[in-house]
Image 1 (tube, one colour):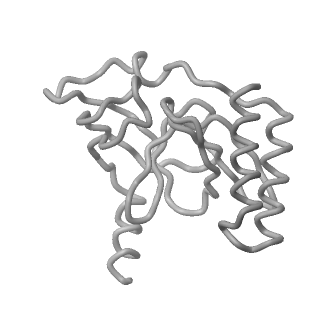
Image 2: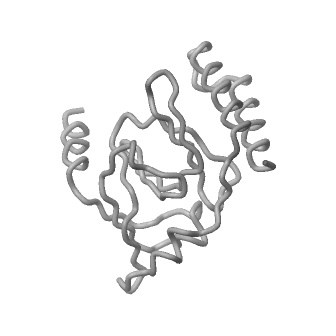
Amino acid sequence: MKRNKVLNCYLRTKTVTGIIKGNSMFPALKVGWKIKMEPSDKNNIKIGNIISFGKDVLTCHRIIGKFRFFNNIYLIHKGDNSSVGGIFAAKGPVYKAVEVFNENNEKIDETRWANSHFKRINNLAYFYLILYLVKRYIFSQRTNKLTTYSNRFCWRFLLKC
């Protein structure tokens, strides 16, 4: 337990370089590419930024929405190649992608990965996501049939908007 706390404190102030291991961000980011991330304040994260977050395993996704709910900032994220995304309560460290390198350590032009096509959500979708969060807090369970089905419904609705 102490090791995780030390690691998180260390990561909050340092630049982190990781290797892409999944296809969720394809074609913007490919498997085997290296990504350099710097800690960023949650207020400076903008829609369209690629961020990494997590405790043990870092997830790398694009921000498609952002809202404040009960004095917490929530970031709505989704991989460019994913059909389902998620909501991240920006309480811990958030790392913003600043540079990307291919397998040969050649720097990839920022216009190729940072401005990749992504679908921004509209205001009505925010309403559904807030309802989903309220329901999740009321039932105080992360997964049950109601939260699973409402999560699937929300993401299908978001992708059609």
